[in-house]
Image (cartoon, rainbow, N blue to C red; front, side):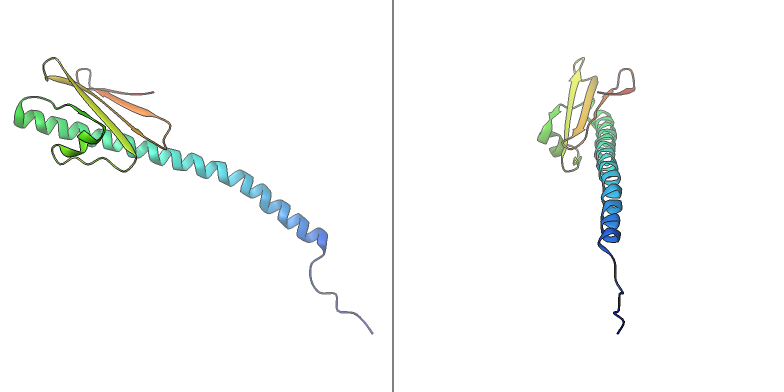
Length: 122
């Protein structure tokens, strides 16, 4: 009588598990990098929305507004995304301002100065 020898050997299964492990070791750090980039993009987008809100307020009231953290959500209909910390500080009697935004899971803080009309990162 001949035995039916269908199936995988232990060596074949170990090779497949090793290949899956190598692929996972490559993919997981890449996924984390993409997530951080997404969080950073959210913070930058919120900063741009804040700038538009500041300019609208300046047109209506003649000065820029001050906000720190949660206080930024309560003014001019602006709502920061979940996890984004915003801060805007008026200068020169409310005629100039600087804003910053960062995400709690991101790696970059974005800044804007309306006097120089410039963005920078830290």
